[in-house]
Each structure stands twice: as C-alpha cells, then as structure tokens.
Image (cartoon, rainbow, N blue to C red; front, side, top):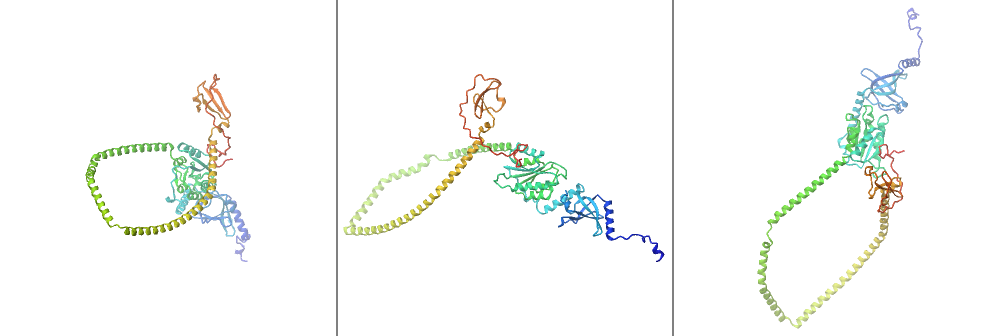
Length: 521
C-alpha cells in the first residue's frame, strides 16, 4: 500500500451507518435547540391533514423552515394557523431522518405583534367582504319601539348594568340576557351560538323572541377583542334574521362584527339609546301634535264659517227666487176654469158620438171577446200559479234541508263558543286575582289608611297623633301615629271586596339587577 494512503487523516475514522449518523445529528440538534421561538410567515398551510396533524412552513426573506403541529396539540392552540399570517412559533427543533431535513415541532403560536394581527384581520375582512357579508343592502333598520330586546354579553360586567340602566331611563322594555364569555378562546363560539340561539326562538313561544339584538362588550386591547372578529361570529351576525346592533369596545375600537351588524354603536350605552326612543319625548311630541291638530281644526272651521257667510251674502232672497214661479202660477190659475169647461165639453161630445154607435148586438160581441180573453188569461194564470207553487215547494224543501244542516252545526258551534267564553272568563278571573292587593296582604303586608279611609303611601303623609286604620289579611286594626289612640276611628264603611284564594305563580328568577333571566339556578 502506498505511504500517502496510510498517512491519510481519515484512515482511522470509524464507519457510520446512515441511521447512526441521522440519530447522532438528531440528538445534537435537539440538545442545542431544545426550546426556541421562531418568527416567520406561515406558508403552504392547507388545513389539518387527514391524520389530524398540520404541516406547513415558516419563511422570511432569506430562508424557509418546515413546521409540524401534532394532532394532540393542534386542538389546544389558542391561535390557529392561517396562510400568510406572521407568527412567533414556540417549540423544539428536530430532524426528520426520512428526508435528511430538520423541522420545528410547534407547541404554541402567537401573533408577531399588533401589525400581524391587523394584517390577519384585514385579510379576513377582504375575504368576507368578497362574499357579500358586509353589503349595505343586507342591513335592516331596527324597529322603532321593540317589545323584547336580546342582549349578548357577560352577565357580571358593567356593560349589562349600563345597558339596563339606560333602557330604564329612556323606555323600559323586556330584556333577555344570553350570558357569554367576552374574552378568551371560547368567546367567539359562545357569541355565535348566542346569536343563533336567539334567532332559533319561535314567535309566540314560552320564551319571547327578541325584536332586536345587542352584542356588547367593554373596551380592551386588540387581542382582547379578537373573539368578536372571528369568522364564525361574523357569519352568525350576517345570517341573523333579527336586526343586530354591535357595541364592542369604545368608539375607536373596530371589530369585524361591526361590518356585518345592521347598526354599529360606538359604546354599549349608545346601543341602548339606539334600541329605544325616549318615552318622555314621545309623549311631549304626541301632545304637541295633538295641540297643533286641535288648533288647525279650529282655524279651518273658522275659515269655513267665514266662507259660508260670504257665500250666503251672494245668494238671492226667497222673494226674488219665488217671484217668477208665483207669477206663472197666477197666470195658470186664471186660465184653469176656461180650460176645465172646454175639456168637459170635448169629453161630453165624444161620449155622445160613442153612444150613437153602440148597439146591443155589438155590445154582445164585445162582451164575448172580452170573456174569451179573460178565460185565456185565467188558463195562463192557473198554469203559472201551479208552476210557481211547485217551484216554491222545491225552494221550501231546499231551505228546510239547509235549515236542518245549520241547526245541526249550531249546537256544536254554541258549545265551542261557550267553552271559549268560559276559558276567557277563567283567564280574566286569574288576572283579577293576580292584580288584587289582597294577595299582597296575605304575604304579611298591611294597608294603611287615614281616618277618612284614604290610603297612605308615604311616611311624610302621617302626622304625629293621627288616627290610622290598618287593614290586614283577616281584618282591620285601629292605631295612632306615635301614641295611644284615645278614640278609635270609625271603621271604613266601604265593604271589603271578596278575597280570592291566593295562587302561586311561577316567576322568572331575577338577576342581581332585577331583570328576569333565562338562566336561573
């Protein structure tokens, strides 16, 4: 063997198998880069693989790094991968011997600063807008005065208290609160489920369907408000059949639900103001319109009265209207006696001529002709009477059958009407029992009246030493304010109304603000 071959520096190096070398490189890389944070743009992401794992790459201007998220860790990621999203990936570097390549096994993803969040939101906004979810023609005006208002927000925050307080000040309405988390991983799914849940309520069901929805949250950072920019929330708001008002954050905070909602409010308090008008202003406006209407009607009546007076002065007098007809009547009355005499003479002459032409034989012929005509008319009349009688009998038979059918239907109809009246009467009786103040007395309260029998509602109405009448559930008791009663007041002469037996009625559980809620227990 030549000397130059025996002196080579690699002549004594051990031989490695491919597997041994790959394993050694894997251990070296994992020991050196056990836990790293890598910033880059997600590229090549097409969603989770059929196995549940996710494969993509992280890249920057000069390099590219393969990345993998295992199935067990993918569901726990707070930030899901999206194509083109700039992120900070936290994990460990390892190698893949099958391709002689290295990759990062991602355990957690974070936004790479506010700029990355804004870029992601802008891309999502552009994609959803291309589907027409933000089109102006999809938006509807909320009702002027809704009967029921649905609120989607946290039940423990200051937002719901502000909304309820503002509604109470402007125009109290029935409010349904759907409690959700407004921050965190599950906030987007809960808000979307609440919007769809309100839309799923049937009209006229046991839980009233809202006429308008308010999705509200207080202010926060861009990351805190991300739940309201999730695609599932935007689609639920766009699909809502109930007009929706978004009130997320402060006036400067913008989320994607603001573009899909029918109306955007700068604050939750402003959303409550948009939902209902001011009751006092409506009353004042109606009163003002009523006063204007009364004044306009009075002015119109006075104007018409003046026009009528002016037109009446233009009409001619009764004497002027009757002068010519009266003159024509006088002239006709003067000619009437002569005309009557001439008419009588003409008729007498005609009668004399007819008498000369009339003979017994001719009279007999005329009588015979008239008798034949009368007999013909009698025969026709008899046949007509018989046909009329037959038709009348048929009409009577049909009327009798119809009357029997109506009488058969009358009894069930009267029975149903009686049952309906009884049900309505029972409902009114229950309503009377619910509204009677005797039910309040049965719960341990008392009604205080003065000596004249008038009820007292304020302590300031009672003077020291005044005679009082206390009505309890089982009778009246005389009392004196601040002392002993020298002369008991005369009991009230008004007969006490009959006290129906109290009925227990299920009441919705109030929350801490006194509003009924669907989530008792």
